[in-house]
Image (cartoon, rainbow, N blue to C red):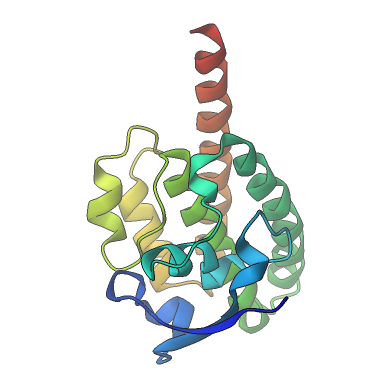
Length: 175
């Protein structure tokens, strides 16, 4: 059963990089009662539903979701490498936005928090698990998504988040 809803983008999720000038997003809420491998990270559907008080799966509460983000990032990273090696940086923006969204999800979800786009810097400041200079590096990437250097920084952040995640998992098993 389809349950299409038009969601007004909550103030804490408003961000030009991900939503442009749009103030609403259409979602099929029934697709998000469980993990959906086909969702678009860059639309943050789980967070939009959560902040709109609509019942949905909360991936930030489940550790097993994080490795899926890293696996999907590898596919995007490979495509981006192709664009940048062929000097087609104009075609890279959509994939970079998707990668940035994955990075934000990995960061917030590792810290058991839904993504917040408006004040992501101050919210993530208190996180236990984060890469060195997280805010500065992500700010650079988000303000210049078409640059090759942003792609390199994003790749490094994802690699660091991956290491942090697996270290966190080892420490949990020891307890």
